[in-house]
Image (cartoon, rainbow, N blue to C red; front, side, top):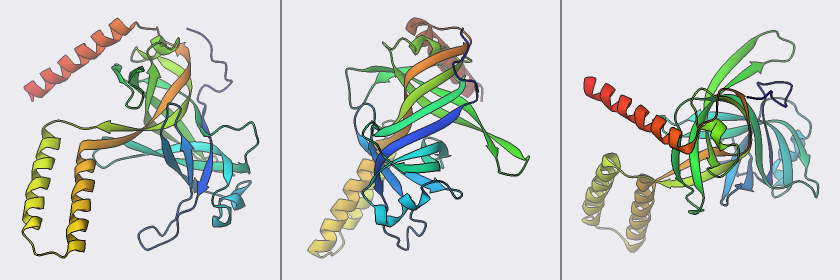
Amino acid sequence: MSDTSFPDASIYCATAVGILDVPPAHRQNPSRHPQLRMAGPLGGDFRLPIRVMREIPGRELLDSAHHGARLLIEGRLEWATSPDNATTSPMLIASAVRLVTPDDEDGCDIRMCGEITGPARIGRHPLRSGIALAHVNLRVQIPRTRPGSRAMLTETVRIPVVIPLNHPGTPALLRPGNRVVIEGMLEQALLPRSGPEVEQALADLEETSKQRAAWVMTPEEARAAERDHARRRWEATHTIIHRVVAGYVELLNGAPATIREARELRRAALQRRAQRQQAS
């Protein structure tokens, strides 16, 4: 165990560098949140939506007149959970914006402190099959304050984190309950989906496709139906997730664990889950 190098152990902040993308306003997207296009630390481009809650330095740079400009935005990530609680997606709440300098690199850097909530899962990176990763969730408590007010609310979020197995900081993330400081980068990953629910969704999709094929359609309508079928099939078999790739870990409280211990902890957790399901 070591003391944190940060004076505030509850630190939670993000700095994003990328190309401004301001989508046009239309009926389906009246809010028109600006986005930053950037690259993940292990490959793959993605867009990070930006939200401004108040007047901040450089806010005028997020106007559509600066579409295509390279910006650096400081702030914090706000995570929204999908309706089925399967995935979370981030939005950057901006606190300052400026143009980049030659030393600024694309990507979203994150610093946070929290507690490992469960046993690690071991797997491969979808874009770099040669990189084995430990997957964990970090429980982070984020204080919310307002200028000129003594009111404070604390939000608890679970943030997905991965780290290469050969990284020297990995042992600190392999034991549930460990409290750690993490520095890393945000990435968007495309993961395949499988299982009974996916098989049922594909079967329903094929049945719908057969019914539509019996309709009398123009060539344009037939091509549109084919595109719609391909899109729905892709959505049923893939999941887009956002997570933090840890590049630095500092153990504040707890004990490191080996990969073998991590596998045993996960096996025991899965057994307990199966026993609870049988009991219910």
